[in-house]
Length: 237
Image (cartoon, rainbow, N blue to C red):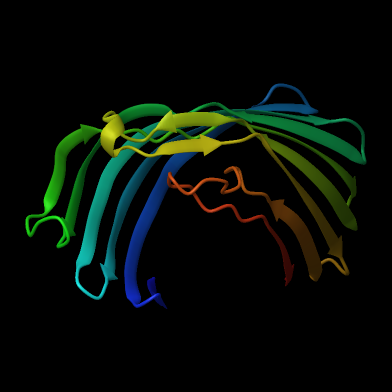
């Protein structure tokens, strides 16, 4: 992302680059405890790699100031969830799932910042920290759903999920860390499936994806994006 602006004879150039990748690999185990009830267990290994860099340059009539920052870290965690399903009748069923907070395995990162202000001196002020202990926490998630199904005809399902709060520093050194905050968040998903014949089926889904980060209210700290979303999906098969 590149931003350029001019005001009062000053010119500002900002270049921002963020690469945030996560990999989830896991498996699950389920067992039928009766003809109408099932239990499930899912275990994930997650790996997250983040690299963020920006350059901010303010050019005035007689001086300039250039700030460069680069932050990167890699984290590994384990996440597990428990599920329960019950067939209430020939038409109704329901289930519940609990994804517990992540368990940190390891996390390390580094930070670099250079601030050069020609109005004060020609020597940049450099902050460099290597091999810093880092952390990524994934909040708890609770979900429940109910479905109405007429065999070989159609199914309607509704899910409600809750994402719990979380608040932590991503680096062990406060000087170079960012405070990551998640607020309690609810989402819903509604889906329908209809068999037009034994071989032709249509499906439609609607869902919300509310932001778990707080609104941006201050300019003296870095905030995550706060964007509420919703979506839909459909297919014929």
